[in-house]
Length: 288
Image 1 (cartoon, rainbow, N blue to C red):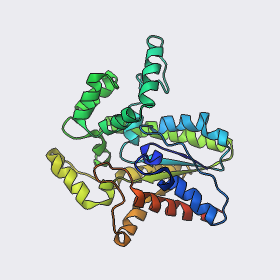
Image 2 (tube, rainbow, N blue to C red; image 1 turned 180 degrees about the vertical axis):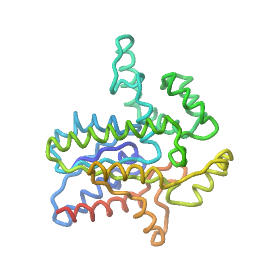
Image 3 (cartoon, one colour; image 1 turned 135 degrees about the vertical axis):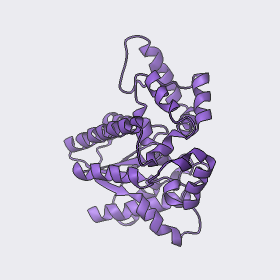
Image 4 (cartoon, one colour; image 1 turned 45 degrees about the vertical axis):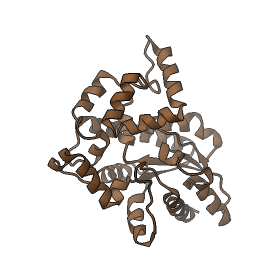
């Protein structure tokens, strides 16, 4: 099994043996289901780069199942920002080598990757990183981000009316998902998308705190279930297997003594990874 994803899958926040991929492998083998789980998660990756990771690396492991962890909070936004300054998909004739070197250095620095991801939810951090040249955006992308200067862009994933840049992000996401499915189908590999919710979608106090932090949000209408429903509609229309973790997380809350996320980091803690591993274990055992 190969697992694709961003920092939520890479799980630098917990010891390697405590991330859900390692726990899933352990749990399945203990149930006499011989398994090897290859974690290909990389911080700051969007669905496009995850597709390339599968195409150029994951397929070589000859997996029987490809699991894509899709992070609701930023994957759509990451996919939108795939443009001429992102050499994963476009190589222009002038300055191309310089861009490739810069991208390589940025993507292989864990600190830079972490800051890059956090910049999508922090306007001051984003502006600072652009200023010092850690990364840049095209004029088209930057113009769209000016429209949301007072509210972190990734919260717009929950807005009832999506701005154009998010709709474009969704279209790119669908395209990259179709490419992953196509790659898996060609090799007769099962494909599963796992939707990772944000803590704003799970804990009412966190969402309330967000809206208090950004008063401008009180003048807008929000729907925390919207991105999940849009994605699920797409999956069902295109016969893509999916697992939405949000209802499982909500159901488990009364039985838990601690939270599932690091509050100020937004990633899953050990308890969160244990729950994800258990949910995936039960899902996979049903396939056997």
